[in-house]
Amino acid sequence: MIIRKADKSDINSMIKLYDIVAQVHTPFHPIYKEVKNPGKIAIPKNYIGNPNGVAFVAEINENGKKVVVGFAGVMFKYLPDTFETRYTLHLTDLAVFPEYRRKGVATALLQEIIEYARKHKIKYVTLDVALGNHPALMLYKSLGFEQLSMNMIIKASD
Ligand SMILES: CC(C)(COP(=O)(O)OP(=O)(O)OC[C@H]1O[C@@H](n2cnc3c(N)ncnc32)[C@H](O)[C@@H]1OP(=O)(O)O)[C@@H](O)C(=O)NCCC(=O)NCCS
Image (cartoon, rainbow, N blue to C red):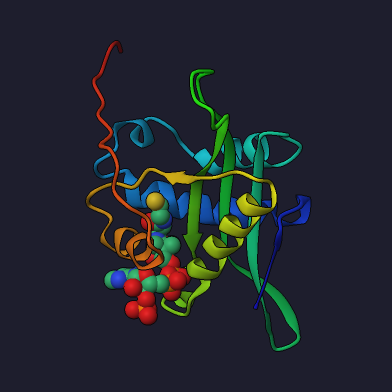
């Protein structure tokens, strides 16, 4: 398996993977309920030609054919000027196709992201995870991520 930066040729695989993320969250996340085919919008906008976003894909060689089995996307997140640390690297998306799970694919993607942060002298990698997403919670804990805050939401208008 190799982990590499995503490019235009990965858009279709990443859209499929993004839609898995959306599927997982739709039952309990109101924002995901409101969009159809979110991957088609989010992937090109966030990761292709966006200086604030970077995506990595995990690729394997299956019977001589290169297959993308997972992807992770991050954004540079700017912090208020009061902090000495000017920005963090925020994990925005992560998904692995079901048939390739529990083989260390997400772990390899996250290790690459931590390494990418290190290379860019970024001190912290952050992420949001739904409390009901047991596999993701277990994954992040296994890598040493610590729980820091809780996200809340309220509907402000129709
Ligand atoms: C969460 C997800 C990315 C994990 O990908 P993965 O490639 O299977 O993860 P890894 O193989 O690297 O798992 C590493 C460790 O995480 C933990 N883990 C991963 N999936 C788990 C599960 N279903 N149940 C319990 N622990 C799990 C385990 O400790 C695992 O180590 P082990 O297999 O040696 O026990 C994958 O399940 C997925 O794509 N889910 C749907 C999308 C999603 O929820 N994304 C996260 C959004 S925040």
